[in-house]
Image 1 (spheres, rainbow, N blue to C red):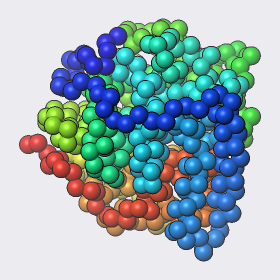
Image 2 (image 1 turned 135 degrees about the horizontal axis):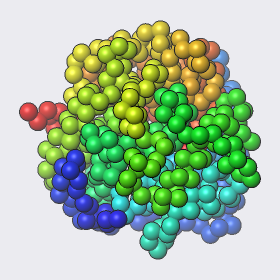
Image 3 (image 1 turned 60 degrees about the horizontal axis):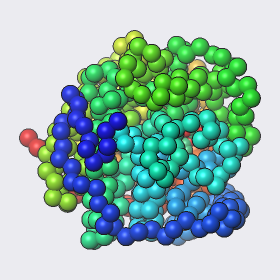
Image 4 (image 1 turned 90 degrees about the horizontal axis):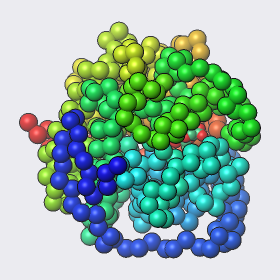
Length: 508
Ligand code: 2M8
């Protein structure tokens, strides 16, 4: 494995000159002793429940003011703060998650920029020498029984002294967007120091994904587990997952923590969970190596959302590079190449939507899933694709309207499920990405409508993990961090255009 500061280049990833790692930004408060930390966590869990109760009390209230929404969102984030990072949910997800940290810091930057930086830095302290950023960073004060699969399952080797424990898989690379957003909120000298700290690390993360993870060889990153997509239980994975034999035996002696704190009808079936565990074990037992994956791993898929974020990250890295005096042009070229690769490899003209590609079979998945809309984020997406994606979002399949954001799966599909996670419900993070895409492509009316629909949903139901796509009722965790954080961002920004980038989007 290469060291971050000496990042290797690959055939697909263009070489970039990265400045050396720096430690010039201010140190963060030290971790309190264990006993204090445990007590703080317990108190915070109580506060989170109270915040959730307050949020739930808002359900159905037309009187709920914007000020109330703002304060309730802050309360959720405060209650979910765990000394060095924010947990997605005190009950269901008691550690730090990778793409959650990106969304959370975008909201935190609206109210407490220092905490936004700290949250993101906590995640990147766990980055591997090969550049991968773990999908979970484990809190050593949380017991193994309080989340499955925890550190005892992943058995990640100690990569350097003091390296925080995490998983060996990744999540969508939303962090460059977050770093750039945090800088924009407070563009002072301290934030420039933060950009200097993050830039080489973000580049290393991109290099890993565009290098070792370009299993298909077409310039896109593959995921090796549905958990890497963030849309874990989406029907987008069903066809590829069918190649993974179901062995319920892998669940024996392993307690599904999720089903203890959430309704089983909202969570993956045992059959799917057995496949998830089998895939994670296979990747773990292969030493978390990526060489030869195509011949030995049962799940290798290119996801449109994962790769759209990979491309958008290059756009954000170009902005970051320009501020810290690094040439932004290679990042813009990479963004363009990723955009083209998504279009060449994942476009389905029959549905007018991007689909997942199973790298092992070369086939596009048939399901219409919301991950196929997210390439709308990309600045250089061709105009006809932008138009087609918006048509798809507003169609009966996804149901975008003045009162309802986009559902996570085709509403007309026989297996559409309004409460099972990622198989139908509405998620705020995905809709927030679509809102950015609409603004970037000059669709002010639709962007404003989507923003209103998202705000109305939380005004009625509270800061839930996700929402029933017909009734708007909250489902899943009641005090969910990225919902609260992204609502702060929406409340603070009613503009219908994106903030001007210091760079022209096109490099000609
Ligand atoms: C969900 O995923 C975790 C596994 O990573 C789980 O179900 O236990 C997903 O919604 C994922 O996108 C999210 O990052 C995570 C924490 O909010 O929860």
